[in-house]
Image (cartoon, protein in one colour):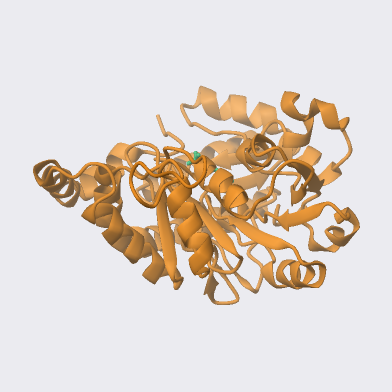
Length: 366
Ligand SMILES: *Cc1c(COP(=O)(O)O)cnc(C)c1O
């Protein structure tokens, strides 16, 4: 049995460091915010090269809080890619604003920057590029368009921790960057966790307030906020894992390169990495005509695979009220029907990978 990701393999590879981090947090008696969270916030800020980092309860909350901090809500429009995890659209709607979709580039699956300007209206307030699968979105055109039209940029960097655009870390390029530490993300906690980062001191202060009931001084709220804090235990675990992120991402890149070399000759459409990009392969995504048949075949062989995502947000139930239909964003629609994620994680062995490749080869030659 080969799974899509194996979280226990990673735990066993760094068990001593993790166990020590957990135990010392238990001994410290600090469980909500406190020194572990501050230390991890400083570590991420320094890793990304940003001034402020705010530990939050999840990546979803990071998006909600970023939108609130920018006063984006009722009556506003936010431009997002038509192919992404639902939370990108859901958080815009949770805050009362309307998501406006832009189709994706069929090769990188990133927001097609040539289609952004025609989606801008007098109500547009922000753009949320998503560094989907770990490949960066094309940030310079997005930042230029946002400056020209006075829009904010929130990077959904949940899948792109460690990725680079023209040599600069994603998440550090827009007004606010949002991270998720969901266990399967490139840097994963053992539970939920998230973070927002910014170079703007006022935005940082507002987000710190919003994560704790809207107060700076305890029990004296200045506005209605949330309870959305990164756990001290998760922060300690993540602090122990962060020094490994670059080597884990390098492992993902090597294994992806190996998949590319073996699968492309079989007529499989393999992922691309643009010349301005450093891809961190949160997911290894192939495109095949007989996607569902391949997935069933792999399953028979004991090999897991998954579709990210079978339903583009614009076709979801919560978005029904906007009146979109099948075919509206053709590249997003096609990606939902033809793409498949193969097993990929830093601890995947070459033998396991060979087994996946052999199974795909057998399917193709049937
Ligand atoms: C995982 C993810 C999120 C949400 O993060 P959570 O920590 O699970 O709330 C948001 N956007 C994208 C693109 C994601 O992959």
